[in-house]
Length: 356
Image 1 (cartoon, rainbow, N blue to C red):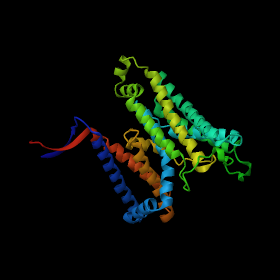
Image 2 (image 1 turned 30 degrees about the vertical axis):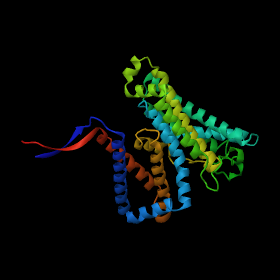
Image 3 (image 1 turned 60 degrees about the horizontal axis):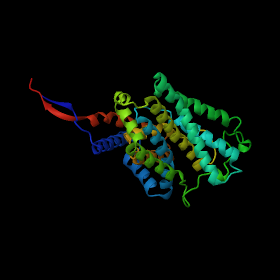
């Protein structure tokens, strides 16, 4: 009889992993098409409308890149922590804390400082807030071995609830007719846009940061220590690396990057803090990092693809009156497809004849 078996790969190249990821995404699109057909839509027609309005329309391109910016940063944040096999599920909460810190600076100093002082201050405050929020799980993991998945996840709800508390309380704009939003930021606290587009300066900031992180991880001794510790904990300990310090520092860097995403969103897109300003960018960053195999440079095309899913979901809502749940459905399908394909990076299918 002939059986399908799995054979351990001696070596899994980057090209092989990339090809498997592409196949997983293609499978996700096929499964998504089945769901669209199940609700009475023509999948080819729906995909065609989405593709044409995203890639052949200036509004579509701008919206795509604007949504890509927070995904670049949150995806990078998750990928950085994953270099040491730490799973930062708290990018959403760290994004919120970064937005809170940036908003505090904008509301208190926006009218008195120039843009050259205001924007760097907001960025620094956002990074510090995100880093401190991520430091708590980092310390608990390093000192007491507490699972960071649980602590980072639970802190998300604390950050979101605290944001709502401020928006319904002290930070609410008196002229907002009781809507939970702050006053509009002064011009000095708003990220400039590129030309006449809606694309703000955050795209350049995100791309520069990605290349800096890649350089540090791949070309410096600090990156070497991180990689060794992530690959072989015992080897790192015997080499005398400060594992606790690296664990906490890496989690804080991850939180700082996610906090910067919050600042970019409130300053570059909304120009104020409002409820639900993040459409699950922090959680989607987990998918971005997973599909990118936690490689900083691979975060760029992955964030582009997930941003297309976001914009495509909006178009499906407009064209076919589908709920936002359809977007989350696509995200879930992609995540499960990528996770399911992980086995093929380590094993290859093989037909084997067994004589019984």
